[in-house]
Image (cartoon, rainbow, N blue to C red; front, side, top):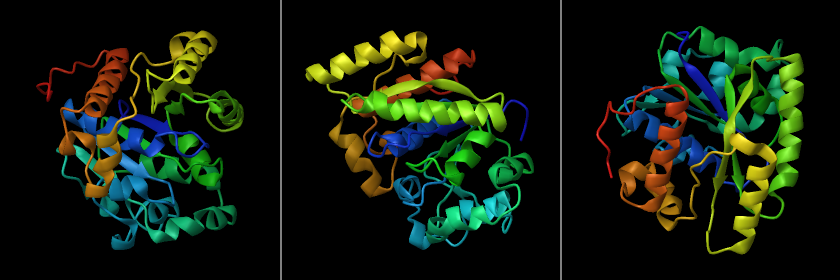
Length: 267
């Protein structure tokens, strides 16, 4: 990988927090701003793949083949309908990946090694992790420069977050000392809900500047888009969900002082 490629894992072992929605739409928003971006689907459910138009039962080679060294990254990448956005999809075989990886040498560094040897050059690689802390997620955390953590503003949010942060600490100590937290992004947020507002307040108090300013709203159009195999920018670019993910991309790019003037604003 070129030295300026940024690899970001989207991780939370708690399901239903908008992890895959964030992976797809954050990546599409980066591409919108002229950033060459690759999404790698590491979730056996394959929702990032189907959400970008490549259902796992229609794909021959995918992320597990690359991790196990049975296929080259360059031969497995698919171009999506979004200019500048590519996908390394999930296949059905990803379901057995945890078992296969248990019996594999250097199992924690397989993905990292596959990315290093890649001939393709991207500005960003976005890793959609499974909602668990197994070998696939560990592979993502070892390969990543940083972790973006989607957190739903609900009662059990902090409980799940604590578990993930402990895992990140172990990975940092033993496998990837340079791994850092890109930030925490609040998802499925409803400003009319007092609990949502309380959890947001609590998170911002606890994690200070680590919680992204951008908040992703609960949005019907965001929920509909994956069934059409499209990110929200290709489905309804003017809805609140699309605006929020563009805002998130701008916020992250600003951290790295990357200009978003490469593309005109869509909305």
